[in-house]
Image 1 (spheres, rainbow, N blue to C red):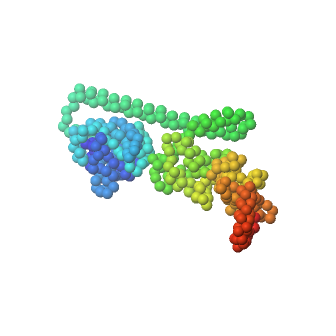
Image 2 (image 1 turned 60 degrees about the vertical axis):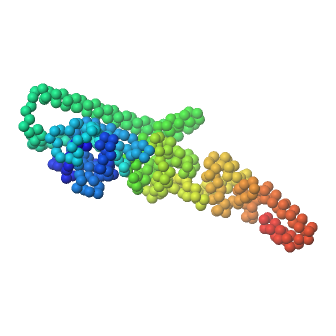
Length: 426
């Protein structure tokens, strides 16, 4: 922290703002200090930190003081950080908040996320070193004002030159490492594009490829995952994050939905998406909020909530009337079905099968038979009456038997009531 100097926060001549992020805390090594919550600005020449409450409290450090930077992942109850290793402080440093420090590095803690983009932009500035491209007059002015009255010796100049060469070599190695990382990311994108082309070939040549080969290919494609998953670190928080997440969900769910008849439960969607995202897991709350924006963004998917509260994702082109007609035909062939039996016949989850049968009942196409055996859905005959199931017949015989017992005990009134109930149940 002894490398920081007080500043007014204004940009100098030839200095350009690159990026800024709110909610950043500064650590002096591992120690917490009073610079708790502020706005961190990255320019082409400096790192500037300004207190969010007291704008007069503003400190800065030149980028030329940075040796190298590294990332520190977030943990349980800990936010992600950027660790900045610094050169030793000069003897003629301008006044700052600290005169001395035990640590040769600082940590920038990002409480409101955004550290990934900030780290990328800071790495670019360290590679380009644009602060060296300032006018010669300013460079001479700084050099003349840095060490007044100093008599240079050849030996010291030689040592400084070697240190400078070593620093440049270190910067070069770091730059090459980031170039290799960038190349790796490009290759990853190429692999994802290759996976999409393989998926299209499997779809086009379904008959030419055996079932085992198809399953194996699909497992390879699923293991590749999403190339650039939308996260809070890359897109911030709030509405913008959920909008970008909704667009990505529309891209990865359209093909699975088409393969599953145009509808999937939100539980299935949650498992499928998180498997594809790898380590960047998605919370149920973020998934629901993103799905609520699908229809507003005019995407090919939409969120639907049944009367029972079950939430599903379906295609905009999903035809409910065709699905109900298909369900009616299936139940008509079997006479009556439970949701488990219907799910096994049509190849869908029990949850969705039950909702489809209940919807058909609500529309007046099917009737329910709720007994001790469970809920069964039956078809109706031409007159609109429910076709009797075994459980319904058993109930009628039980009522008649009960009526006969009451008749023998001269309970005529009870007999009439039971008889009326029996006629209505038919």
